[in-house]
Image (cartoon, rainbow, N blue to C red; front, side, top):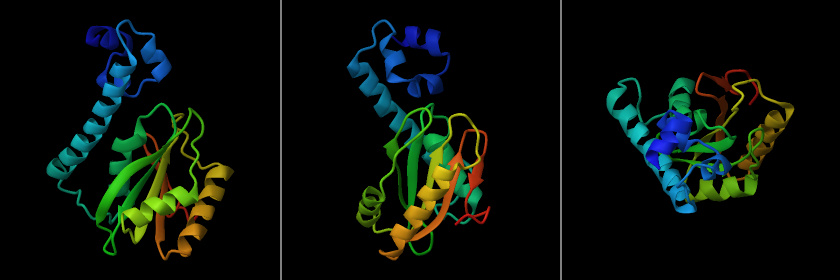
Length: 184
């Protein structure tokens, strides 16, 4: 199976980010294999984050720059072929409490519901969050929908006294920051 996957996709990154339908076309790939690949992807993400913490002296568990948030989001969702929505949960001092992908979408959209986001924020006891989604096309400019969603989330968070610190649109090549572009 491994040989067939590498022949088709060339790299491990391409394999773990491949569409389920395309994976099923590969000889020997079953639903079990696909589940295993999804688990591997999550493990790779956690391992990458641990390696960043260990090897990148500029990275701390405190998010104090847009670049430090981007580094984490890049590993979480930057190279995905479908849009994904991720969150970094922070305490009062902007120390990372948790991070996760909370929604998976299609090649050109991801749906996020403020109610679900608020539940996750409360579960993590966060005082602030940074949200992000990727654009697989690598076009980093926000759409009107992106702007409206950000405003809706920001307004929803006011009722629970949680700060939306930034919204990043990411790819593996760069990012767009709503905060840096005065859109928050």
